[in-house]
Length: 207
Image 1 (cartoon, rainbow, N blue to C red):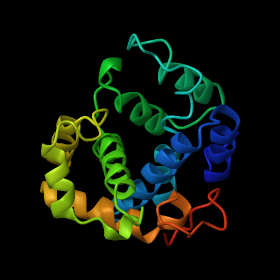
Image 2: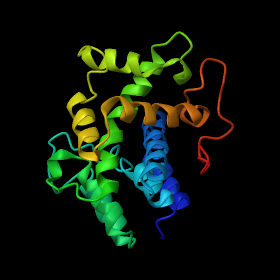
Image 3: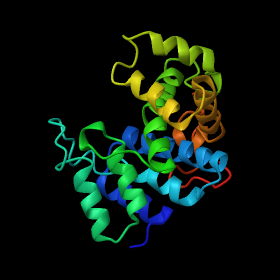
């Protein structure tokens, strides 16, 4: 199975039933596309890395944070058996601290940097009366970052450290990911009350 966007989405559908987790992976895909464009890298490869990064989480949640078992190790073993590129596999392993896999490539650094941030932006959108990401701004996100009671599961340090590793100022990093998600809001379920995507299974390269 080649490492295409279609193949990645098929695996997500097969392995993940949670709609919110699927939307998270779509959000990370969207952010990775934006960063690939910014940094001049292969947009499709980066998008696939973002889309596939948590596909095994539902089956192998890894509460013990084992380095070589459960998520993301089990998923990577499956993908390696399908002969997926090592760059993507290393990025997926590297997005979890506990694997011990260093984030060396730009792809790996970007995946780590956008993962938690997309979750925070989604949380910021869903507490708006409109439930729309269009009503979220960078200042509001920075304010919520300081509120430790808000979206407790989001690791703020990962967001900050991720931006630093990319060499991108934090506000710029947040703004880039926010804009990408706003432009693709319907597919991410963040267009607002009364608005739905025609299909959440595809994301245009122009998203």
